[in-house]
Amino acid sequence: MGYKPAGVQTGSVAGNKDGFEGFLIFEHALRSAPQAKPINGPRVFQDKRQLLETTNAHLGQIGRIILDSLSRSLQLTGDKNLASHPRGDEVGHIPHTDIGSSSMVFSDVPGLQVYHHREKNWMFIVPRPGRMICNIGDSAEFLSRNVLRSSLHRVIPHHTQRHKVKLTVVYLMRPPETDTVFVDRDGKEWRSVDWHNKKNRLFAKILDSQASNTALTGRNIEVDLWNEQDQAHL
Ligand SMILES: [Fe+2]
Image 1 (cartoon, rainbow, N blue to C red):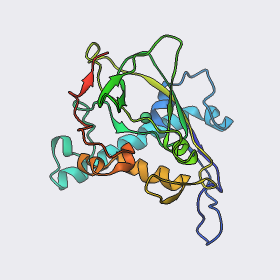
Image 2: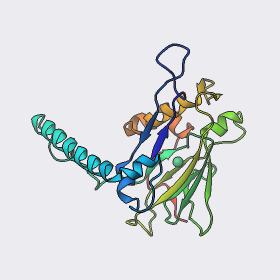
Image 3: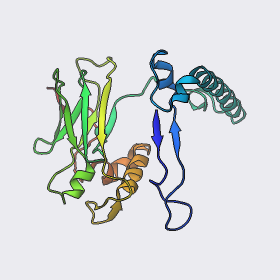
Image 4: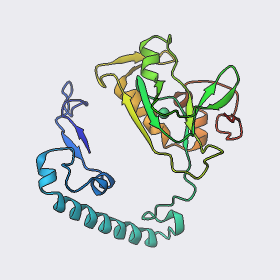
């Protein structure tokens, strides 16, 4: 579940904050939470849980019928059908630095790699029981005036556990979104929230635009960061 308080974004009247408050109810979270346990959010969510689940299921079904119908009218077939969810070729997480100040990463399946700048190579960070991995992100780099460097990392299947599902829990820390201002690597000033939004949008761009933009990786380095073969098997 997610909650967005009012007054953390720009309002519709110049000089004012927004007045929009909202709860996000993720369908998969609702479906997988035990019935007996209160779901995270206002009490009414738990009291009316059956109604929420039925509404979610019906709206999802109606939405898929509408998208399928539009797709057939537009002759979007196979993977292009707007109602389809192709999953066969989904893999990993592209090379990037984290947006916030620090990230604490918990997982028991290998796959996370960091880029070693001296070796000019990717190195697996193999999980150890009871340990977490802490990444420094862009906001900490900018706020420390480049004394700290955000770590460049990616996720690809580990050669010994290529088909295993990797479940990761990440605690992301960010500076206050609208009150924090920092200067990026090119000397441009950003509000924290704008940097977050800019970078979030980059994650969805096609590979060529990602590779030609240093905001995602924070570096201008010559090697092909998107090449799965360039890696040390640790
Ligand atoms: Fe990350």
